[in-house]
Image (cartoon, rainbow, N blue to C red; front, side, top):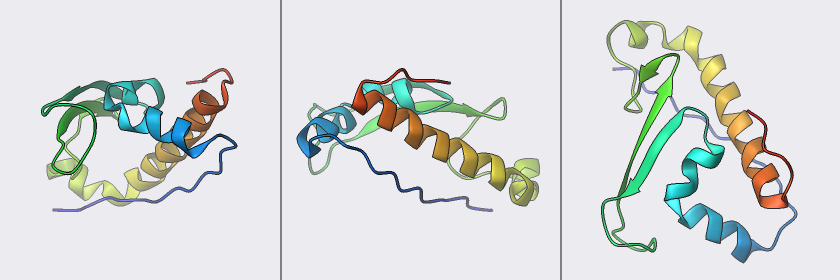
Length: 105
């Protein structure tokens, strides 16, 4: 099965505690992660060692599980640029949200 992963780095001009407060509230993930439809705690909040949550997302019209399979697995090399662009856009939305700027889709 093909795996897709990417790394995107963004700089943000906010206090690290403010940034962490947003990131540790996983229920806010749909506010900045494209395609994210829900994100709910499956263990007691706040985040800590052993914390778990479940999130659901859509990518290219499909609900995804992190690893493309079947036809999507075969198309992974063609899908990768779209996936990487989506992650980069998520980073820009996160920065905007943290800095109090309008968040664009």
